[in-house]
Length: 228
Length: 105
Image (tube, rainbow over all chains, first blue to last red; front, top):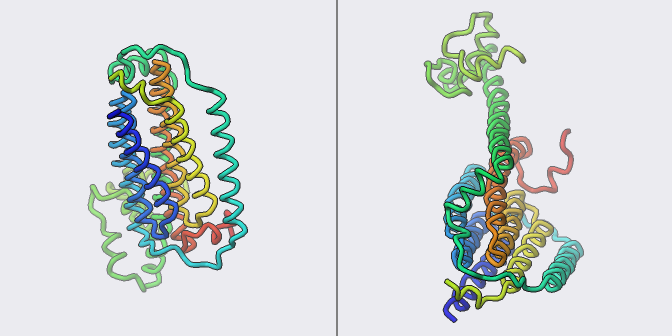
């Protein structure tokens, strides 16, 4: 009885937070609601005897990913969603399609039925069993996952770096025309150990002046700039 | 711990289907890119709930390993996706998907 109560509590919280996330117009409120969904799901995972997944849910989802999202929302200074003339036909179409999708899912899940597998007490869900599975039977997917993460890191850095080059480059062009402001000058006079973006800007300016690359630009960004 | 068996599996599946549907409807009716991104995260979580529920009721750890991998993919998606969102915002000064209907101009 107690578990049923907990299920209704966490499930209702998750559903309410999910509806709130879709209804809210301010993205920041949506993000807070989504964090509520994640925490409720972590509670459900504990009910399902999966403490490791519950912990990872809170740490990775509610911790890392949502911090990224909230950080971007604040970085871009997103206000309320723009009020445009809303097309009610599309909204009605979306709701109808969602209802159809839910009907399909409910039908499939109903036809699957409850498995008759014995619900004996096992150590499934404990960290040790998950680790054993990851490093024996599913070693290859695990390693591919690490490659995927590496690709994501490189992709994110590429996205950020190209933008930095463009931005600093325009500043360097201004300086060449004699109109550079003080901030760009500071960015040019980089000391060793500064960020890669500054190193890129410095390499650019030195290339334009026809000088040899300084030791400060021998980092990742400085070495790559010669290709362009 | 055996009291978990009091909750039928179908309850978890129904909850998961509802969460997934809410996510789909959100992607369809939202215009803000970040809001759509969060709806996609909601759908991933709904599927994760299904995985964990089946893992529990079949006494098989494989479902939880899948959840682990789905979370990794979600983290990678967040890193790259938010980078793209920032780049698009700097170029268009807008997060509305209607303002980014062409990839290049």
